[in-house]
Length: 475
Image (cartoon, rainbow, N blue to C red; front, side, top):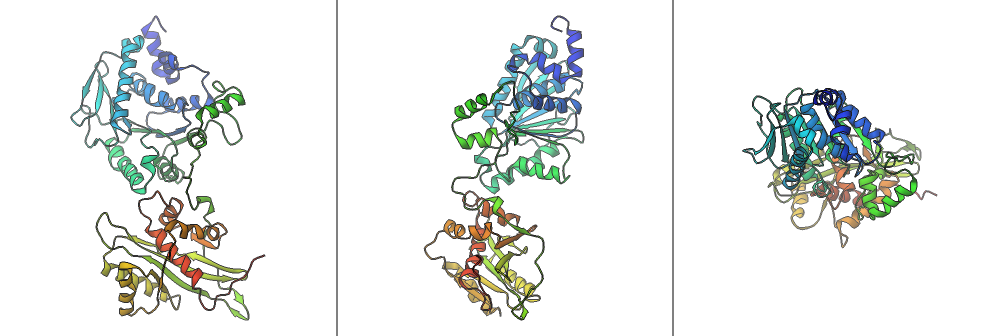
């Protein structure tokens, strides 16, 4: 293979495994692991199927997928014409382009078989390498560079690779996560064609991160593709790369070198690690599929005691203002106490004051059909004082006010933690996703209006339960 170009190109054109282990042998320092063989095999198997790769730091995923595969995709049997690689920042994109260029310049056999090539800068700011003998191109860009309408001659991108396009900072707020997701769906995917292949490499940095959203879509058959998940040590305690870590002491040594337990959990074991000041954990959330029928208690039927709607009104409707949030809940009495069922008609919108009043009136009429006295719970502070007065003027008598006192928002949420964890507060299986998101990630989400409305509702139920409610000590 080293001596005869025809031999090596014939072999490596058909097999990405041979290509990688021949041209990129200088990267192979340990015996290739089974999970790496699986990645290589899936890359080689199809030129169209999407692939989502989550693997531990130092696993070689970027070397295989982002460094070697784009070259083979052009030189090998897939014969790609336009490869686009996305990194998170322009600095990372420039570094990756430098690494590609250095490989092509210093790897003599690769340069002989693939060259000549030239580097240029596109009109939209990305860096590209163009290969004369195959009429193909590799472009490296960052997430913030627009690629609308990008082409290489008559070719649209036929292979798109996203390598670590998120980090801890970019996943902190829902707005940032939405921005990355919308970028993929509205910019990246439409830039390709019907047979464009999408490969995304990264880590599970947040329960609502890009890869987690794609994982859920993949499980629901919304998107096609193969999702690969490779922690350094699996749930059975088996190390997935015995060639590099042959014994448990080698794994322990790596863990010691990493130092930070959070980094170890997140980057090596691929566990989503909450922030240290997280008030409510996702696994504490309890769900219901339907509200049970009324129970016969004390010689009569217990009622679904009443519906209350916690409200956190916003002052402005501008794009940077908070949202007006409304969270309804049903207090339900059982033989052993009571439960609060959060109802799915949750409102979280930017509303003007008249729109807020109209929405309240609509909710009131909606719940009045099934429950005699739906009540609104609103904080009696500042601008919010005007809403109870206006609702009463509009003919809605059941308006309650509450005061947060000296407690901050987090403290009010923490007080409710045990009720959430023990299932005294239950959430609908569908319809409360955004509320749960704000509760679980309180403190890092940009908006917390639903949390405020939820806390108003739950604390009001605790402080001022319906007169017919009975409370029990559960021993």
